[in-house]
Length: 321
Image 1 (cartoon, rainbow, N blue to C red):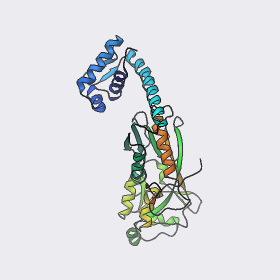
Image 2 (image 1 turned 90 degrees about the vertical axis):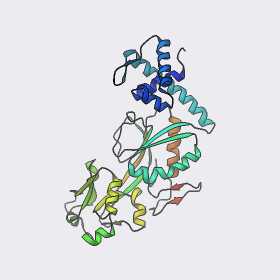
Image 3 (image 1 turned 135 degrees about the vertical axis):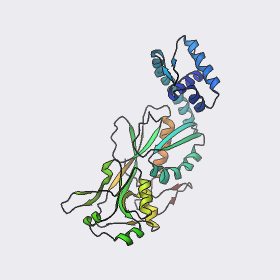
Image 4 (image 1 turned 45 degrees about the vertical axis):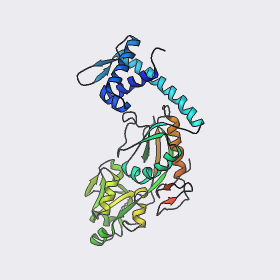
């Protein structure tokens, strides 16, 4: 083979980054080194892979085909390396994990030291997006999604479920009064999501039997923002246990209409593309999360120390696979 793996890696980094400078920064090497390796690859192949413009680098037709084949080669090599490392009990390389901000803050971030202790050579790259993202477009290896899945191209593993409740601060309830039935909510400040609109359908029913679709007095794109608004006495919110269980246990939030609210839970899945070059790292993370989130069937009010010393947020109830 004329091309080296180093040259293929540089070429794909340039393709993904769109410029030599960005690729060099991602690779942690000088721009001159990146440029030299790319030029050497094109010289070996006797073809132009990238077309230089004033603003970015674009693939030629030959470059596009070669990039596709090069990715297959690099994935095969990475899979072989990962398989060997996993058999030796040692994984290495980056693992990019994405989750909605509240889940990242309240569940994943506290669990990551435990994963890092098990796999110290894996470099975790954590990101938060409150909407569903395209994993390939955002270069994410694995995401955690809450709610029903719609993307059939993704593989998934059920991690558990999380119950939702109507909550408000004691300060707000002293000021605005405590609702005793569903219609009382219409006289209150209700905190809702900008999207998806389905999150603004609350698990309480009108007298006609229909679920309440709220008219929010304040909207936010993140559950964490709504949690903060509720804590600050801005109104009533419908939020998941994984981010509010400790607030309730410590009295900062109070459940509203507990006798009227229908028990409602949302599934929590790990999602990923099966044919990924870092599948061994993904599977290790998924197994770790499944194990870490296993706990007795109960409502958690405070963090629970696991035998290994890891701390499990009191948030997600496991379900059978």
